[in-house]
Each structure stands twice: as C-alpha cells, then as structure tokens.
Length: 107
Image (cartoon, rainbow, N blue to C red; front, side, top):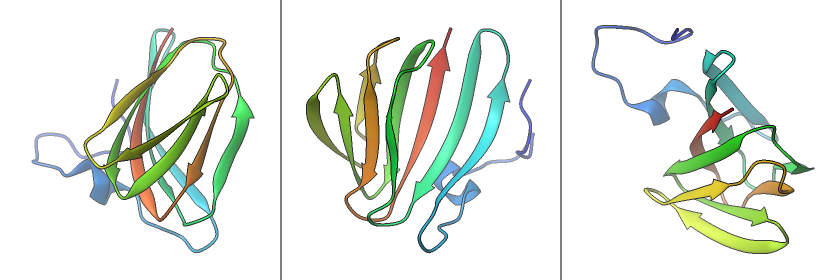
C-alpha cells in the first residue's frame, strides 16, 4: 500500500520532501481507490490553483505557513494545523512562506 517511503524505520514526514526554488514538489505515499496520501513542499509564492477534488481532502501543515482558499473563504494554517476541504468544493493552496504539508484524500 505505501510506496516511495522506507518501512520499519522511524521517519519525519517533513523530511521526506525537499524544497525546490520556484516549485511545488510532491511525493505520493499511497494511491488506491479509497485513499491517497501525498506530501508537498511549496516554495514561497508558489501555488496550486483553484480546483475541486473527487473526495474529502484533509491537509495538515508540517512546517511553515500556507494559505488555503476553500469555497471562497481564506484560511491561514501554520505547522500542526489541519483543515478539511470537502469533496467537490473548489479550493486552492498558496505558499505564504516556504511550507510543507501532508494531504490525505478519502474517496
């Protein structure tokens, strides 16, 4: 089920994806018919433009600060904070500063 990540070792998720200047970087850890789990790093000022997901999406910020627009409402999340972006509701993600997050989508 898990891929692209070591097993049977203690890990820090934020260390599993590196920052790249001017980019959003992602690393998929799980992808199947019922759930996907991906970690992301955003350079400051980088974004994923408005879109809708086919499932409920839960994001937890691992490091830094991100701006999440969900259904037209803006939320600023810092490390350790979580938001749910409901299925079919338009949302976008923006790097207020360099930040990392884990995204879990349940279908």
